[in-house]
Length: 188
Image 1 (tube, one colour):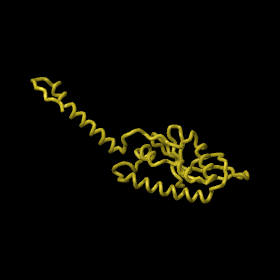
Image 2 (cartoon, one colour; image 1 turned 90 degrees about the vertical axis):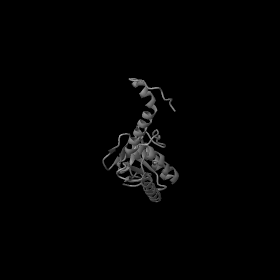
Image 3 (cartoon, rainbow, N blue to C red; image 1 turned 60 degrees about the horizontal axis):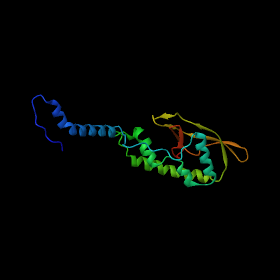
């Protein structure tokens, strides 16, 4: 607690000094309220684990894990809950307080659907070997500032017999800081 200094007529400097802790606390509360209202969370961004230098490298990791029927590795190629909470959620329109969308609800829905699609695509394509020739997107890219979402991922692949085909093995991809990662396996 700051000591109360004797007041003298015209001594505004002493008055400001005695109120400085209260003003600092008020400014911090206002800044926190503004950050919360804007959907921002305290703390640094979470680095994306299992991200790749190109969309082709990310797609190649998917087809490699698919050939090995490695569901755990495939799941690890998607955005994690922590990455979503720290990096993506604060920038989505759904995170705005006036929308009223709880993070936990959206994450639970998204991750459950992703696991379901992963099981389906693994059953259909697991064990098949492909070489990725091209990665394209079917919709408009959405720029959220620190990241971009590329929807409707389409892979042009060649199988062991030399046959080319276009596959939808997963949904959107996230591009952030020059790296690429699967958003989820939900085929959008």
